[in-house]
Image (cartoon, rainbow over all chains, first blue to last red; front, side, top):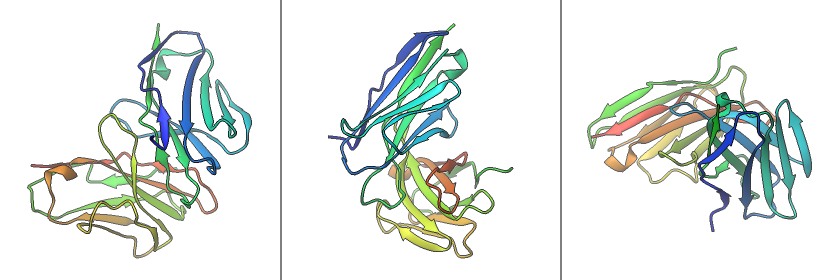
Length: 112
Length: 113
């Protein structure tokens, strides 16, 4: 079992819809979770961090964390074609001071 | 302000040569990280520094890989006796003191022929 798992996609949604991206992790002691967006040929860009159970909203983005289910998700409201990218989930596993362990990413396409 | 910078952006080298990859973190950032990213995968941790101290080098694949950050700012990742399997995108990230959020540079694409 991989430590951080994401559906590789591709995930396609129509413009204006809600895109839902999911991530599960194996280490129950993990406390810090991040979502990065990576456009093709570019570097990962941090879009959200979440540390507590529940929802965290930032503009059109909402991160949701459920530590009991070892599940973190990212919702993108009013999806735009410019949101088309690969979304990477990253976790700081317990026993790792700061290193990020990444999933393999979900490729999102927003159709005009 | 300026983000993380890396140089060179592209490096082609012959098998057996040594290469040095440079990372200049965001000004004032205490922690600096090196990752390697294969196509279609997320970045994979190599090593990280707090100031000039190397805190964790558990991700370095073997002893041909080393890193330093002698003055607590710029860091160099050195790969000795390169092999074709070392070909990848090498990414550097930095974070401020007390912060866990990491900000990535543009990466160095290394190709070993």
